[in-house]
Every structure is written in C-alpha cells, then in structure tokens.
Length: 519
RNA sequence: GGCCCGUUCGUCUAGGGGUUAGGACGCCAGGUUUUCAUCCUGGUAGCAGGGGUUCAAAUCCCCUACGGGCUACCA
Image (cartoon, rainbow, N blue to C red; front, side, top):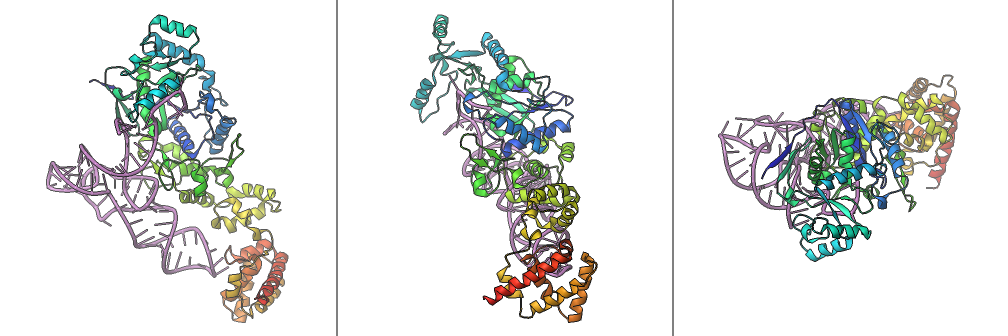
C-alpha cells in the first residue's frame, strides 16, 4: 500500500481564493462566514477573492438567488475582486457558461481510460440499492464489471446504445489498487482516506452538465485557485478531488475545511427553520421565496450593522489567539490565518450576536450614527434634524440594541398616552401633583432651558421644599415618558424644549390623576 | 451500517507535558447613577469516560462514548 502524499508547496505570493455558492436559494449565515474567511484570507495575503456561481443543477435553480448572493455579499462588505459582476480574466464566472471546458476535460479523462461512460438508469441503480439493503450498494470496482457501462460492454454495444440516443453519464474510474490518499488540510492537518471505500462518482450528468466534483476541480485549476476554503461537508469528497487533480496531471490547491455552524439548541447544523423557533435571522438580508412568496428575515432588516454581523461571524470559529473580540474587517484581515480556525463545529448564540451589535453601536459614540438615524427618523416623519438626532443618540445609545429601537421609542417624539400603572400606584402619592405643579412654575420661569439649567433649578427647588430626588424626579419622568426608565430627565427636558416639557408635564399630571381617580 | 472529522464552564473560546485552567456571552451579587441602561468589582460554572506513556497528562497514545458531516445523474 503506497501513500499518495501531496503537500502544499505553493508559495503564498499568489493567493487566489473563491467563494462558490449555488444559486439554489438565499445564502445563509454559514455561507456568509465561508465567504468571509475566504475574503479575509485573500486580504491577509494580498490575494484575489473570486465569486463563482455554481449553477450546474438545472433542477434546483432558483430565480433571484444569484442576485441575492451578490447583494448580500455587498452588504457585508465582501466584494469580489473577480466574478459575474466584477468581471476578470478567468471568466465566465457562471459554470453554466463554461460547459465546453468541462466537456474537454471529461474527454481527456475518457481518452486516457480514467473515466468511463455508464448507461445505467437512475431506476436501475435505485433497484440495486434497494435490493442490497440493509447493506449499502456502491458503483465501484467491485460492481462496475456487471453494469451497463463502457468498461463492461463491448465497443459495438456502446456505439449502438449511443446511436439509439440512450442517455448516459460519465463516471470517474476510481483506481483499483487500494491506497491511502493523504493530504494536508490547512485547518485539520493530515487527513487520510482509503481509495477502496470510494465509489465511482458521476462527473458528467446525462444532461451534459458537470457535477460539482468535475466543475469544481476544472474551474479551480483554470482560475488558478491557490486555496480551497470551504465547509466541512466537502471533506469526504476531498480525496476524490485529489484523485481528479492527479488524473488531470495538475497540482491540487491547498484545502482548508471549515467547521460547521450548529443550531443554538438541539442537534444538527444550523438550518433556515431554526431562526423561526429561536427568534433570530438565518439570512444576511431578507429573502422572499419566488415560488411561495414567503419572506425570511435578514440581519440587515432586523437592524444589525453589517460590521456587527460580520464581526459575530468572524468569531464563530476563529480567534486571534488573545482576548480581543471586536474587529473591523480591515483589522481582522491583518491577522487572519487559517491555523487559528477552530476544528470543531460552533453552536450559534443569538445573545452573543446582539452583544456584538450593541458593542458596534456604542463603540465610537454618536457621531457615526447621526446620518443613519436621521434617515430612519425622516422615514418615520419625526421631524428631527441632525442636531436633534445627535442629542437623541447621546441620550439613547447605551439603552438600545438597534438604531431603530430609538425611532420605535414613542415617547421620544410624542407625548405618552400610556402610563405605567404599577409605577403610578407605587410612586405617585397624594401630594405628588402639588409638587409637580410647583415644579412646573419653576421651570416656566427659566430663561435658559439647557440641561444644566434645568438640573440646577430642579435641585434648588428640591432643597427649598426639602424634598428627596425620588419624590419628584420619578413622577416627573412618568409624566413626561409614561415609564420608569430612560435617559437623564434633564437632558430629555432640554431636548423637548421648555414649551413641550411643560405641556407634557401638565398633560401627564392630568392623565395620571385621572387614572388614580378610577382606582 | 460504512467512511471521515471533532470533543475545555450552559454557549463561543485561550491554553498543546508542570497554569490557582484565562477571557467573552448569559446568569447572580455589590458599587457608581435621580430611574433604566452603560460602566466598574466580584461570583457561578468546564478539561466526556476508561486505560496507558511519564517523576508529572486538559495537553501525547489507545479504546469507548457522545456530537457532527458525507454516503444522489444536489451542491
């Protein structure tokens, strides 16, 4: 038994990586993470990030999926250097437009006896599998001799079948002598498979389109891909790919198989249905299924900043080796390396995702968010100019998870209509309204209505009346917001302005007295 | 079933022969704050099990268990 060993000898000076999704639906967060790690690796080595669309399965093609992929990547800031939209020297970047290449490749293999034509119908194969149960039936060296293929049939028989227009596929002829296929995975280290357990995979389907295995190897070679960074679900077919590269006489790229993202609870990998149950999105942006019309939520529409979403994904399976967790894409690109990618699957944690969003929101203060809040506020018709937005941000940034939480906080832009009944019962005494009446007069007399001025007058008022903060401030807050929590009331009063503050104070008092009378 | 990959607090992870096994999320408690939140301090909680190797094992080896993936004319 001879060990076939192919170590990565390629220097890191021409890094070319690709993200190669199928347009069979929206990209989910696992896919985005794969794209991210590819992008980061390219950036870290001054390489090229390529987007290739693997649309060789006509049956699973979904309208709009390709556009979704491009848009979702763009939102995440993972713009391809080469691809359908970006262009490039190695195009076309849609596999459906590269069929001649695959045909040539398959012919080369056929000519060398490294592949063969098989006429067995799916029905025949299914029957064989069924008959073998509970054992597993395989199309391989032990069975291919008794099946309808160009290895077992005579040349004239094959010619006749083809003349009759019988559909056929091309299968890879797995080497008969058992050997170990050993390769070095950049994340896992040495990985080894025995060829004896491999089956003769279909390379070219009856419709003339290649399967993933063929198209992937041929394209990765022609696109001069240096590192194949993909999900762990591809690990079992990696030996086939190594064998294919060898059959073509090509060096294979470095492989790196990423661990999968698992469900927050329960068993298995994260799937699109988990979001429903867990109350979190699985997709980067909203996706509407063109057939059913169902819409799936996206992180973008939920209010996540792309930087936060990407940061969260980054840390789900990679770490810098120290205790930092907050990274911009540029910072991450500087130190990303495959040997710091963890080997085991990671359970997705929605709480932590929110934490990343909050960190991103608060990280650099109000200024970076003014424009975005202004846009949101305008859409809601709140009439806040940029100054107002800055003030609101200063008050609210540390109390919300998403920017839209701010415009969703009704009392910020409209007098409250609901007053927390429990709080009123507990904190609003018979004398309270009297205090507030007096406070209103004090505030009405103010000429400067800045936060500091309101605070000064408020404190002087308490002192004069010999009252405690809690006796007046909380009722004041209730009258103005209807709630017991929130920003500094002095800041808020200044933000509202004198007139609106007094108006809310009087209306709030009236409403609360009304409530108390009905109790 | 077969093949392959994996296993450190509930979760994400650092640590890769000698560590009081570190950090983060969550949770709990205390402090700061007019409230809430932020922030600060502290606490909770972990090396899957069993065999080896070694003076010494979370760390190396083997077995078991468990988890995951693959096993299509899907990717």
